[in-house]
Length: 84
Image 1: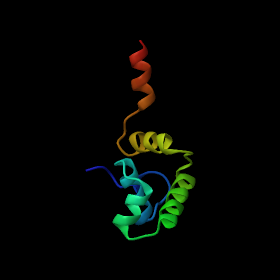
Image 2: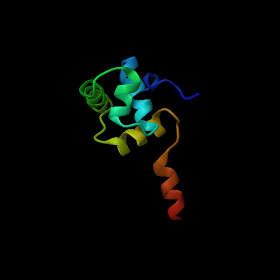
Image 3: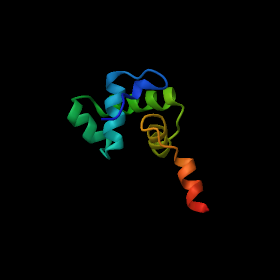
């Protein structure tokens, strides 16, 4: 099981962490709102807070942050090795 998103980097609330995990699973903001019983506006605010805390600008950066900081995989090294 992956580590908590709070193991490295800024502390996220439980809800922010859940929103991240659901987004990374491919769920839309609307689907997350339905599943969590929160409004669409609230889900978007949670995602905004996550981006600010983790210093990412978009979902690809969020995905890279997760892979590198939680899973411990250095994407840059892998991509560079493929170029050789």
